[in-house]
Image (cartoon, rainbow, N blue to C red; front, side, top):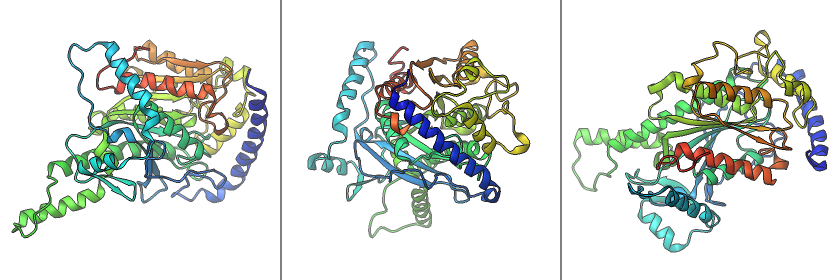
Length: 443
C-alpha cells in the first residue's frame, strides 16, 4: 500500500483539483472564444529555460505557432557535444556494447561539471558557438557532429492543467534525457476548456510536422553550402542570391536540432492524458508515411494513459476512488475537454479500442505501457497493450506495485525509488529502438 504521506497528500491534491475543475466549469463559457489558448496556469510552478548546461542539460523555449500559444521546450544533453561514436566493429560482442553503454552511464555525473578552459577551446575550435556560457549551436552546420535521437514528450494534467515548463516536468525530462541520451522536445499544447478537443491533439501533430520541416530546412541549408564569401571577392548575381537564401534559411533553422538531432530516430512519450496525445500522433504518423520524411517514429511510451470507456473494466469499478485522480474527478476533466455535442466515454480520444479509430493496429510502432497497481485506468491500458501484441507489435507492460497514477512524474513523488526505477526501465526499453548498434538490450 502507498505510504501515509502519499495518502495524506492525495486527499489534499484531490480537494484542490476538484476546486479547480469546478472553477473551470463555471468560467469556461466566457473563455471558449479564445482560440489562441493557454499552455499553463497561474498556479503552476514553472522552471525558467536555461541554455547553459546546468546539470548536464541545456534548455530553451520556442514559440512555434504565431496563431496559437503552442510552444516547445528543448532539452539538449551535454553529451551531444562529444564527437560521434565510432561504429562498432563487425565482430564486436553484445557484452562489449553493454560495457560501453555502462561506461557512458557511469560518466553522467561528470557531464554537468563546468567546462574547463581546454575543453571550451576545443569545442570552439570545432565551430561550436558559446556566448557568455550560453550554447547557441554550430555555425556553420557541421557534417560530422554527434546526432541524438529526438523524443517528443507530452505532459499530463487531465487536459486542464500541467505544462511543459513546470518544475516537475522539467525535472522528469532532464532525467529521461540523461538516461536515454536523447534530445527531448516537450510540447506545450493548449489546455481545456479554453481549447477543447481536438486542439491538444492537433498541437501534438503540428509539432511532429514542425520537426520534419526543421530537418528539411537544415538539410537545405547544408546542401546550399556553408562557406562564407571571402572579403574583397567579386560576386556574381547567382552567388549573391545564394548568400541571401543561406542567410534567410539559417534564421529559420533551429540550431540545436539541426546540429544534434536525428529525426529518423523519433520516440513519443506521453504522461497520463499526454499518452492519449502520443498515441494519436503515432497513428497519424503511420497514416502520413513518407510525407513525414525524414522523421520516423520508431517507438512510443505510454505512461499510465488517460483511457476510459462506456463499459467499465474491473479496475474502473474496484479502484474508482483511488489516489490522486479518482474516476469522478476524471469524468469532470473529460467533460471540460470534449465538446458537449461529442461527449462520450467511447470517444476515439478516450477509448483506444473503439472500432474504426485509425490505421490497423499491426502498423503501430513498438509501444511500452507503464501502469500503476492503484490506478483505476490500468486495465484499459493493459487491454490496449494486449491488442497490440495480438497483431505482433512489441508492446510490453511495466506494472509497478503499490504505485499510484503519475507515481513517476508527480512533483511529490519524483524523487522516490520507484520513480527513478521507472525512468531507468523506460531507458532500457527505448534504447532497443534508438541505438545505432541495433538492439543493445533484450527486454
